[in-house]
Image (cartoon, rainbow, N blue to C red; front, side, top):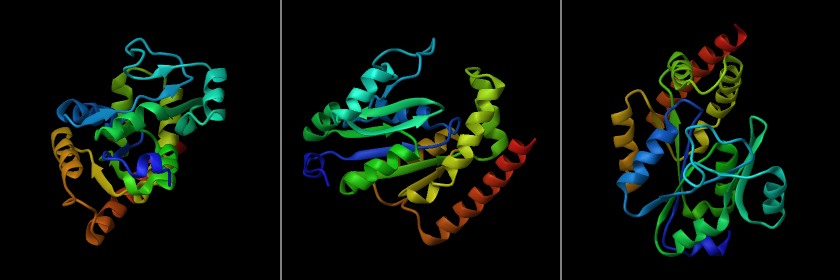
Length: 220
């Protein structure tokens, strides 16, 4: 356990999901509504998209800088996704935790696992599921950011990501954005929505259906 984080006032709130499940929309709305929360901005080695801003969506760096940050222990977590590297700079997170801010992370299961292994006493983790594989694919297409081949790669990654749902403290099915956001905000402010055994069973059935649908689509 890293005492720089374990003894501080704020907590780490991890929000993960497959691409297209609504994680980024929900996360940024949450940050805008909460006075005591800030969004952790990751570094990445992928190129900036036209609709992205440096320091708002990511810090865009090259592989050499990224590798040096890893070597110098400047990242709380890091992972490779779709051939590019992503990581969370440590300094800004610790500064916010020290002054009592809750830091929200928009990261995948790999980064979540690293954070939870090292800082489990300071973490609340939430996983966002799509309602169906069809809806997930529809959302990816509507974003109009990626080619069909990249969308297929994202569906492959979604299949792997969804299998980690039960490693999280809470799970939300994002069928309706307003309802999903209401649940997310409630989780951050209370423990009332923590997964019970009956709810876990229902979520498990939903995940099995999602994985079956994704598998069928990826075979096609």
